[in-house]
Length: 269
Length: 279
Image 1 (tube, rainbow over the protein chains, first blue to last red):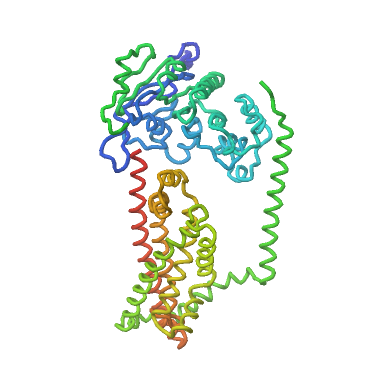
Image 2: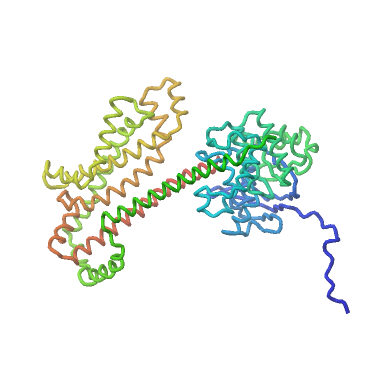
């Protein structure tokens, strides 16, 4: 009797498992009386590029920071693949954060470090502290970082200090650092708000292209509607901490956009 | 897409690591030479605690708590606290204008004023409070005044330097805005500089209080007022149980003072944190 036949898992097409699943997320800052996020939920497929739009103060930055737990959500859950991010602590949380690269509005580079070392710091978590402190990285890893910097056009600036670079160049270093983590997901927080419009377009194109090339999903906060339309097929709109639209950009008309950017409280402008 | 040659980069990085290694080696050698010069025998540390324990058990224990509860002694404790308060207040009030004069980026008198202020601040710090106390006792005679003056100088040297450094790291933009609006040097300081450094100044002020209070408990050792005098008398007379009680009391007072400053500081920081989050 042949009862021990293993169920054949591989032949069935698996339903595309979401890479990221956010459910009913609530965040309140200490000392505040109201929630910044009020029950946000959505899913992100692997390799998907999604823009998050909304007026300033709508909770976009908080959402990204609640996903990698730089900000602590007080209700709801975040799952990255099979891992429940909201329940992790200590070493497990740090391991999970390695899988999510973050790109910041103000670049958040280590100003006094060279460009190449800033990128190498993307792997700070997978190196021993002593090695990192003495900057003793394996040559193969250095070659990898150099290739990445070549790809974004910073080959001539490897040995310069980060604070000697222009805004657009610094953001490209920030992008390289995030990608050097070999993440599965990029959390991108207003990458172009500190840059002038012409460079902003280049930077967005670079983020999208690199995400595609390396097969990384991206969740990208933008408040510039034009950029969101140009680069993201799917848009999540936040207003006062609630998702009021999730779908293709084309489904948004003037009235809907007016609703998203409508200012309920003029003093917050 | 161009490819940068990695070999040259690796070469440069290897050179830099080598220099870092040489520097570390030099540091370690220096440490070893110092230990040799001072003839520090590390093996002696083994017996240090045994002998310390024996000393405490036979001579310093039990502490004579009755002694420190005498009204005469308690009055000297109160005197110590008052001396520290007065010296901290006077020192901080003098340190703010001196720091303004001494800061290279904001000084209203960048030539003579800056140099003079730096001489005062550095001079006050170059000589220890205890030495200042001895100097003032020689000039003014024994008593509280000498102690307060010595502590004031200590406070001024300490806070003045930290204040000046704080002013030197401000953002120039508000200063530029005030200048553009036609403000004079005092207005530039009050509205362009002070709002940026106020929180840091209060934090430094609290920290300075801690330092001054700790000094105040011992300036009396030389007769400059406060409880330190009793410490010296009992120590000279080998009344170890009383010395133990006084040292314990000083430790307790310092801990109480630090707890209070800690709460003051965190109340202050809590307020700024909330303001940052509200943005």
